[in-house]
Structure formats: C-alpha cells, structure tokens
Image 1 (spheres, one colour):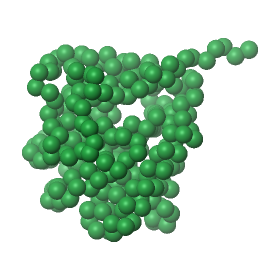
Image 2: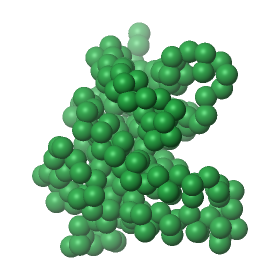
Image 3: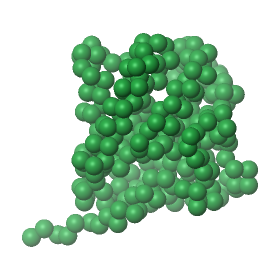
Length: 257
C-alpha cells in the first residue's frame, strides 16, 4: 500500500487524531477521478470472473461516523459490478430474535457465498462500538467480543476463501457537521436526517477511542480512508480491492462437456 503514490501509509498502532482526513496535498483531483473510474471498471471485470469461478468470496466492511459516506462509496466503487452478485447488508438495532442469539448470529447469515461480494454498511463492529460507548456492555465483554470478531474473520478467510476488506471512513469533526447540516438544508437529503446523529456526535471522543482500540487489536487489518474529499475516498477503496483481487489470478472456467 505504501508504494502507491496516491495513498497514505498508516502504520500501527494507529492514533486517529494523527491521521489526516484530507488527501495528500499534491494530488490532482481530475487525475484521481479518472483513475478511480478505471479501477471501478476493472473491479466490474474482476467481479464477473469471481462470480463465474466461484472459488473465493469478498466481504467489504464499511465503518465510520455518521456522514462519512458509506452509501456513496457503495454506489461509486461498485458501479460496474453485476447487481445480482452484490449482497449489501446494513446492521441496525437487533430484532428480538437476533437479541436471543449471540451477537454474530445475524452477521454470519449475511456473509457472502463463494463467487459473491458482500458489503456491510455498518457491521458486526457496531457491537463493540455503539454498545461500548453507551455502556450497554462492560469492558470485559467488549474485549471478549473483539476476540470473537477476530476469530470469526479468520474463519471466513481460511474456511471459505473469503477476502475480508475493512475500511474505516475517517471524517473530521468539522466535516461531519457540514454533512449533517446538508441533511437539513437539502430536500433530497431530508430522509437521511436523524436528530439522534447529533446526540451521538457529542460522544465523538469516546467513539474515536473505541475505533482506535478495535483497529489496533484486529487480526485482519483495516484500511484508514480519509473521506473529507469523497473523490479520494472512492479511489482508496477501489484501489485497495482491485490490487488484492488481481493477485488471485482468477480465470473463467472452461466450457463444460
């Protein structure tokens, strides 16, 4: 990753306050946008081979504070992928049935089969973020859940040949306010407005602390994506996925007799 001149290297341990939320200053926006479109088209081609070969699956985890652009990333990065081969899941408040099971029960059911790309818009990490910030689980349980998540993701990788990509969409405190205000001012974004987002914003420092903890304790590594400029967000996600998928050297299966 550090070899790509467009990308920041973020070595562990991560301190989010030290990670920029804007792209490198010397980048040309038009050039990056053009490159992102090429990458999105390449991802569409790789997705088609993935679907035909059915040897691997892909799980993309998008986590970030409200306004960090998770939905926009899905729309732009996966624009050229076959819709029938994408499984997009969003994990909100658990139902009574889900509460009656372990916290990963509902997540495992939404994981991609071989040949599929699964996208989690928010994910199993909610159970060690929002629940921890609000004190709905204690620290002992939070740490046990982090261990369980690590084991779960390793199971997906080693038992089902799943490539797990985890993206933390890193937005600044100032930019988040702009994004939330747009939901009030712009009619086409009114449906996104949730007064509760402003209450969660008051717990910003607690969320940063919990995000840092899960990022630094993860076995499957995270990619930190500066998202104050959305065109850079799309480039980082697309380039990261394409780079790793290309290394699989996937091929279309031959004609069956």
